[in-house]
Length: 467
Ligand SMILES: Cc1cc2nc3c(=O)[nH]c(=O)nc-3n(C[C@H](O)[C@H](O)[C@H](O)COP(=O)(O)OP(=O)(O)OC[C@H]3O[C@@H](n4cnc5c(N)ncnc54)[C@H](O)[C@@H]3O)c2cc1C
Ligand SMILES: Cc1cnn(-c2ccc(OCc3ccccc3)c(C(=O)O)c2)c1-c1ccc(Cl)c(F)c1
Image (cartoon, rainbow, N blue to C red):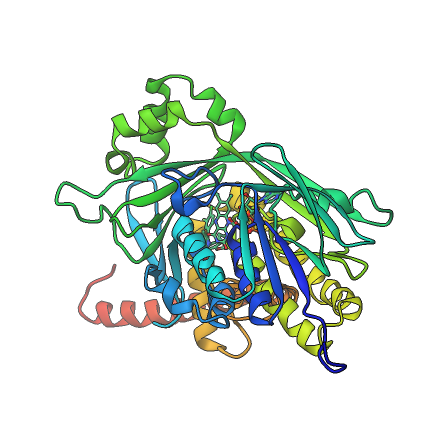
């Protein structure tokens, strides 16, 4: 090796899910030698892949991350744009509210297909190897050694320049970090669980609802959403307290519940299919995880849910994790691949934003659970869109900043807090002004009324009529 030729960095990406597969592309593009370890078998060869939501919403941050490794078109050609939310009320009325202009839409993407596309993209890079059915068990943050166990229980230990934990909300890499002092960790399971249902194509084999919409049934304690699939079905996710899931013990109770809470969805779901799916499924838990720091020495770093798992009530978990790949890549450029400088800088840059979106997703969950039914959802969103039209530079709806820009999550929330203060003040002033104004107007009207009624009476009296 010549004096000037730097030794090629050798990294281990642990976890071949949505963020790990993408990050492996980023690391390979940097010219690193990449070993990607995924504890599951190759999903591209599996008939059924169990796991999280069947489809998910891809928005600006995730798209930009895909774009930078040349995957945006490969993914979005299989995506279904959702230009608006479609709010379903109890009477079955559906109200669309646009997300913004025609180029401001989120996309419904099949999770498995997205993962497969990225795994296949990884394999195209030189000096990259994917090790399926290899589970990370332990790692040494002093030496960079990591041990993986395969299906036969055989263990292999290798040494790396960097261990990148993309192994999800229940990360093994993070578990190793938790043994270290001054590693902060916090997790919260929420009382709600989720269950995925399916709205199949209708009898004409067409979509059973409007296609390019994120369908939302806000019912305070319960929420349901539906995202379209390429096979003309809708993956419908019911969010409900576990107690409620457990209380629905018979088919009658289930049908009665949907008749009361989601009457328009019941015929689309199909009673028999709903019963079959609901009675054979278990509601799955939802967790939020926050931790700090994201790195250890110059040997390990966390991305995606391993670093910041969030409840799915803002549709940002994957988008945030994909944006992590951009942030780390930019910082590695800035510090010329010096991990001892780049990793602390990554934690410093990313941790506040990731915590902010975790908090926002949780806030939205609490908000939707307690205060959001169709009316309040509609009012809120229409007011947001109206103020955005009037003050496009200053009043950017929070959902727009989060989903259609790469404004830092923390900044987006700070700007929203300012908006809330302004709105509260305006409404207060309007309220006070309104009351005062109403008083003045009433007085004036009463004066005018007296004046007006005198005039009418004078006119009518001239005709001998009095009313
Ligand atoms: C119901 C629901 C709806 C959602 N909807 C959206 C949405 O609309 N938009 C959005 O942006 N996000 C959404 N999310 C969040 C999104 O699913 C996650 O943020 C995203 O999957 C995180 O990707 P990840 O790669 O970090 O983790 P994961 O997708 O969990 O992948 C982790 C990978 O690591 C592997 N692994 C785990 N442990 C090990 C180990 N020890 N060794 C090796 N491999 C290991 C796993 O097998 C897996 O393949 C939703 C989540 C849920 C639950
Ligand atoms: C999967 C996905 C992608 N985006 N969103 C999303 C999230 C929040 C939203 O608004 C914030 C808000 C809603 C209601 C009241 C105040 C603020 C909007 C919107 O404005 O349309 C869209 C979701 C989603 C995920 C789960 C549930 Cl339960 C849900 F309803 C939607």
